[in-house]
Image (cartoon, rainbow, N blue to C red; front, side):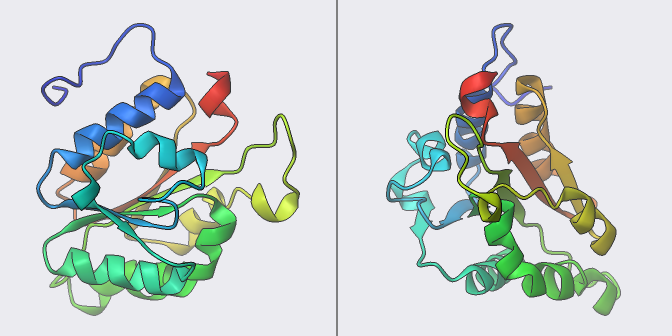
Length: 189
């Protein structure tokens, strides 16, 4: 059953559904959002956080590995961080923390530690202007192969958005989630 006030609508738009999903996440007292251009303007993802209370937004400098390490630490303390990396290409800089730490903690601790982090990333928009290849990578399959305790979910359609973020928040299986958005769909779907 959808969270109260977050039932699916018939005329869903991708961007609007992302905004609704962020509002839904923000209602949980354990959730906080962190990353670059989270509390300050800078990316299209910033605009999806406009209805999120400012005290839930932690702006960070461009320190991707530190951000992911902080996210794991916050999760270990009972928070549910939504760690935002606007593009896969930036998340690559945190790969050590994702693959060797967040993903492996349940294995290394015999399931004693099962941190839940929601990693929000995207495939960079190519239209109307192609930002060049260092900004439009899609590493979904590579991460699926490398991670045993992190589920990677691609958001293909507007109706995929809210259920994916709801699953990431409510999951009880001890897994973290990487949710992959399409930058081009913010204006196209």
